[in-house]
Length: 119
Image (cartoon, rainbow, N blue to C red):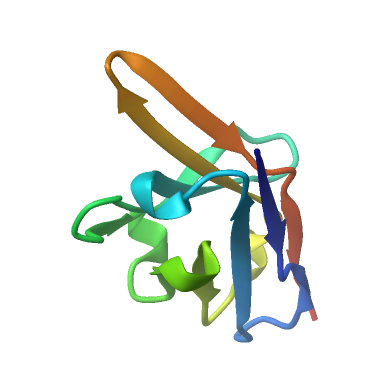
């Protein structure tokens, strides 16, 4: 069972990146998936989330209109499209997959991918 993030890198302010969160060993479509980020010296914060059923999404206020979370169930992958990036978006971005069945919580994290926004 594994979650692997990819797609991070160095981008100039105003640029775009698409992060991927690929699952292996389990079916990601049955999990609610969230992206979090953690900047140096700061708490980890929620960036965006997508539900398992219906695909409803929600975003942190500072990401609304700039970031889009989506699923590709055929690829067992969730994406985070990030546009109009700002230096304050610099952080390690983590993917989390979670579900609760019969009172048991399944909770998986990826290793993170670094996003650096700088000129």
